[in-house]
Amino acid sequence: MSRAWKLLLVLLLAPALVLAAEDARLDRAPIDEHDLVSLQRGAKIYVNYCLGCHSAGYMRYNRLEDFALTPQQIRDNLIFTGAKVGDLMKNSMDPKDAKEWFGGVPPDLTVIARSRASPAGSGADWLYTYLRSFYRDPSRPTGWNNVVYRDVGMPHVLWKLQGEQELRTEVVVIARSDDEEDVEKREVQKLVLARPGTMSALEYDLLVRDLVNFLVYMAEPAKRTRIEVGIFVLLLLGVFFALAYALKKEYWKDVQ
Picture 1: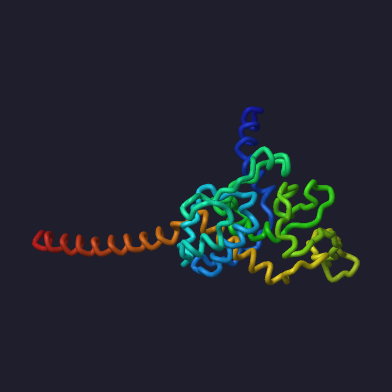
Picture 2 (picture 1 turned 120 degrees about the horizontal axis):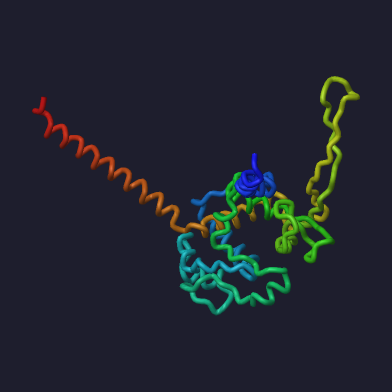
């Protein structure tokens, strides 16, 4: 194989190799986009813990009426600035300050649930695992790191709720046969809760589930409507097909 062909092969395989290197084992996100109470809680968590740094620049507050909320409820419980119910969910953080504090501008999260999809799992799975995988790391500027997103610039804003995890290395012994001397030792990294937070592990997982549920909805607010319209259109096409077939049979019944 010539050098040019080898170079071309490397360039073609590079994206796949990068994906394979970045993909981590993801937990399945137990979300339910039809659970309005979960979506309401997720929106509340987002505006309280995320919106200060991460805008949702393509999402308007009034879309939250899809969760059975009134404009007055949205205004009283989910808007903490002078924004109006019809405004976009943006924050007032200066990008220059954000870059100085975090090393980069926090990304807009409107479609984060769709952009994080990978061969390892859906965007919801990635977010659900990521938000539960922070651990203390004194070597990082923020004092935090993440198993899913190594050397992340984002601090763990939910640490008071979850507590502080540590990444510990354990030696696991694996017997390869009935012979006790024929064993294999492997080092496995494991997250351990060193200092509990205000929530139990189950309560925190449910909180993350609600937040991810909202992020998934926000990435495609019209998904439910699209599916409902699609089903109606398919049923309508089925009716038209039956009528067209009956008409065809009637026209051609005398043709031998």
